[in-house]
Length: 235
Length: 235
DNA sequence: CGAGGGATTGAAGAATGTCAATTCGTGTGG
DNA sequence: CCACACGAATTGACATTCTTCAATCCCTCG
Image (cartoon, rainbow over all chains, first blue to last red; front, side, top):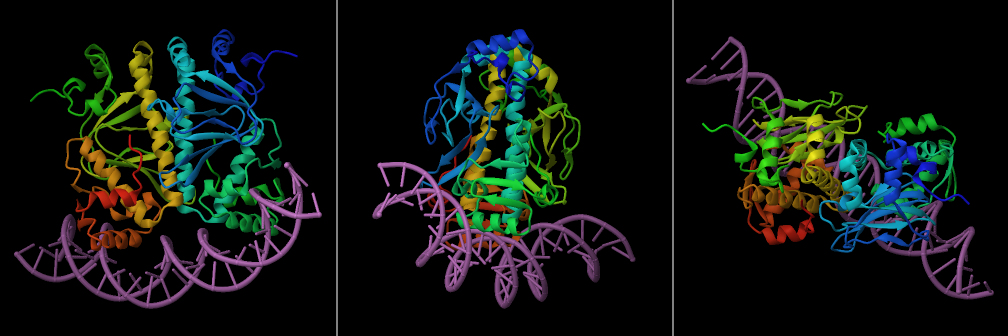
């Protein structure tokens, strides 16, 4: 079996190596640490952990979340292969959030110190790092609009369309896909009660926009769904 | 009158120059462009504008906002002296949001190309840039929790306490301060109707947590207010 | 086979939004 | 200089969406 390297990683074009020359990718690859797979419900890191690495998802999916003083959980994002986790810890040097695997997942750890000094010598890497962070800021602002101004249906539609596009970018079907997160996680993320998520999904099904089979979603009317979502801005 | 430079800027310790050596600040200062003041309601940039600079607030205050396809405005943040605007444009090279002055404001423009190449030679500047972005990501996630899980009172309290702390950091009173934004902007930002903002402010006043005189807010019980806010995480 | 968590569905309740009227302050033009 | 108009803010009455509580179903796992 071939060794896993950035050079032969199928999703490198969605990950940090974008825009890097072959020799530069080799440098990057040399600092990447690939551990054993993370099992479902295992934490990649916890709030309060010392910040040492940022992480790229190689396969599987994760959720990030914070827990407030009063113990309320807030899901802040879902991460698919090629996406970067842990950027919110850079300034404080301590993770302010948690990250947990939604399914068995392979993770690439990038020691931040090494990455930072490597980036000093590779402008396009430095740039890509800023790009990834800039995207995250933009997406978070999009999400704010969603949470502030949209109805439960619009939120759900936007969520599904967003996921669909991201699956598509990763070579999977954007029409049929499996949700790896629970209804509870979705509701938490979108600011809705679990029951509301359920209701909205059945309603969207009755309108024949989607087909719901437990975790499996099929788009039967992607146009209408996108329209309802108000065409979110994607990375 | 002394020329305005990063070296003698009172808020440099809150801005990009943090952690920079004197000689490095001089380098940074050399690329900073300081234009004429921005008047109330003037736009610093608009959505769709080509991305050329990021901006540091020198004095005054601004709001950033997006406008969705259906014309709905979403206020995404308020910026005080020392804070950096425009980071969400880095990856797309086009501003995805608007920025508008809430009062007469002085702005420092930092040509991003120059800043980027300067950062390559000054690791602590590169680092500070990442810090600022990391902070913004963290704060946005905090805000998400606020919008998703908190009542109107808690949101308002969190908003006021956050502002209070930021004013304090800038050498202003954290007990008495003036809101530069309208009730409409506050409501928009917090995901509340203007009327709700009004009602909540009067309610907080009746509970003797604060004193409201139009735009002027006085904290009469900061402890209770912070408690209600759930002690947000600040940068 | 039983237990438990996830999901769905129904009914009732609460928080916030919407609509409408009023006040207040400010700036503009006669 | 005053009157008027306009927008911002406040307050009340009502409507709506979503939440909460509760019961049931279903699937998985021990």
